[in-house]
Image: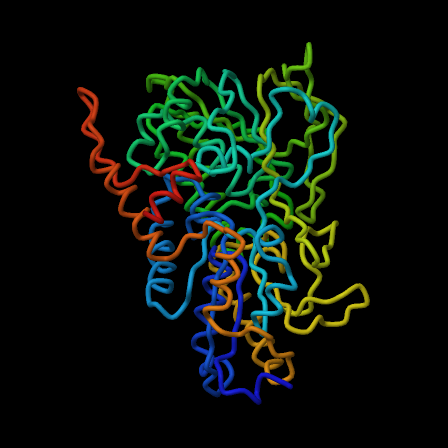
Length: 472
């Protein structure tokens, strides 16, 4: 029997409550616009953490003001009441694929990518070598990471030229007091306050016209108090492909102009008092080896590159050593394998065709779909996720009439299953309680003498505390 022969709503489970999952749910509720015909849907979103929003809560630097707008948009979708939220429910532990298939007509995986992509160079295993994504999880108050982070280095290297690399470098170089206006947890503030850092170096493999960050993220670097930006004239190399990109792409033109202006200002202004911290931007550097003594990082070696005319870089045979005591790799995110679902270990994604999950032979698996980074890899900005979700939902609706029918489709059935297993799940009502609690913590903050900081929120980190507040 297909779902078209029943009078009940079409039941869909979405695994992941980040932008990918919420956008997919929102588009599915507007199925008349997508499929040209109204589809009665019932949607449940399952999230491994007690709180919603995924990458927005646990993967973006807290000092990004534009993120607040994205959170507000996601909140409006989930606050309408036509999509149920189940937090603190882990796929593969609390619910199996068979459980989901028994209770839903279709399952959409929107689990994103939270791990660091590998960087295979000698010394990567040394004490003081860290993944940028792990550091992001720490300063964003991820409930499953240590509350402590070893911030003992005075000189730090950050490898990567994307937005995450800039976030990592900016947070490392910023004075802790200047982050108090954000939602950073108390343990993160305490850790950053004790950091002795003086110099943070960001290294990119190609030139200024090939960077992967965006103008907004770049400009934010210059907003840090008592942090000088340092650039190097020898790193400003532009080949034919660079010139073409600058002429045809306004975003690249803006970033190159910004960097070039900073370089000129730096050379012209020798009278300005030096800041206590410096943020160095290096281009045309490929990491070769992390060096160390007694198992700890003491430096990093790079090969100087040159552009080859196509915008790609090639080594020159010249090597440079930088003394650093910590190295953060921010060369990209990588997806995690999910139980009972295929996985492309090279790309870090669920194998799929336009969002339809496929088996080893490339045949679509009925009722299984993917969207977001676990579908296409960790590329593109958050806004790209909407178009991605639209494609996946279009395929789901196209397949809908031929999908197998769930055996236990009642909305109460999944609740009974979770409760029978003792899963301490949270709800949207619970998130609103936690949300209000975190805002109250911010409102209750007592500024130190001479500091008039107003805190909008203080993020709760401990998982059990989050669950307790949500479910009281």
